[in-house]
Length: 126
Picture 1 (cartoon, rainbow, N blue to C red):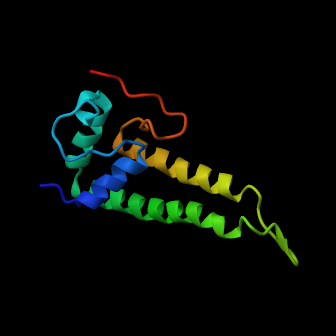
Picture 2: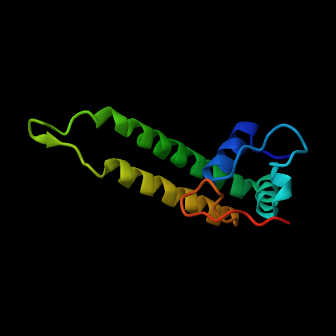
Picture 3: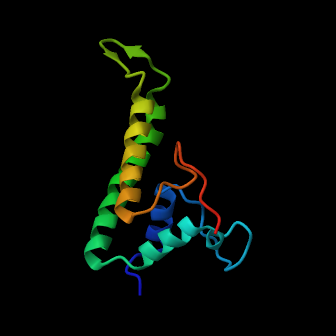
């Protein structure tokens, strides 16, 4: 039995750049038609207890980084207020940091970044 919850599995897939798993066992867009998706599922379902702990640390960090990207919109309406001026590169910097950690997660799991990751190539069809 997999110690990861369904929500954790969804987030791990998503952070790795892979599409939603879906509930049906068949379908043309199913991960089952792509070798890399199957590899990701195999890895997620066969992590050791120590690896699950590391995956959960990645999830905590990535969730925080994802929220930080979204919260940059709080300062987009102000360029400068008194002595404070916003970092005009903040959004790009945060996205780059977030995507860097997403890529590290893929490396830890031993899968290439999925199609939803920047600069990702489409998965190979079996």
